[in-house]
Length: 136
Ligand SMILES: [Zn+2]
Ligand SMILES: [Zn+2]
Image 1: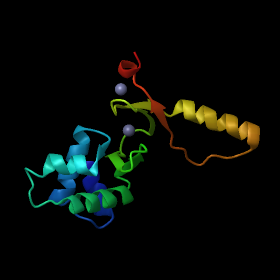
Image 2: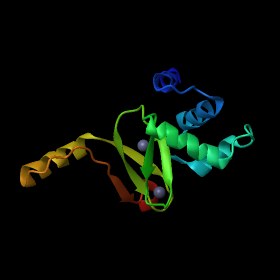
Image 3: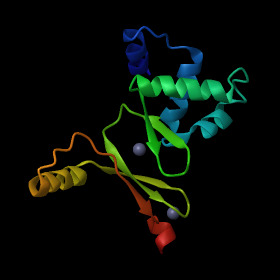
């Protein structure tokens, strides 16, 4: 939490209660949608509306504190960006999201560069399929 406060402060923002509460929810669970965060905080924080949650998430995303993920559901999911870069595999049956690390994708980007000369600056990959439980 100290880290968010420093990032916010260095950009001239305060760590308001709303920002702290939302960051705290994302510390507890990754890949939450704005609606899911709203559902979790609305009882303890009735002053916080869904639009506040969206606004706060937009700000935290802009500041690089939160990362926005698109799993093709028609809405975004959010997670703290302070952890290592990783990619996602999403189960289309139960919605479970599995994270996997960067190295395989880096290898792929190098292969593409070797074959086509294309230089990859960044990549973000989501695999769609079935998790081990749903596939069996
Ligand atoms: Zn599954
Ligand atoms: Zn993730």
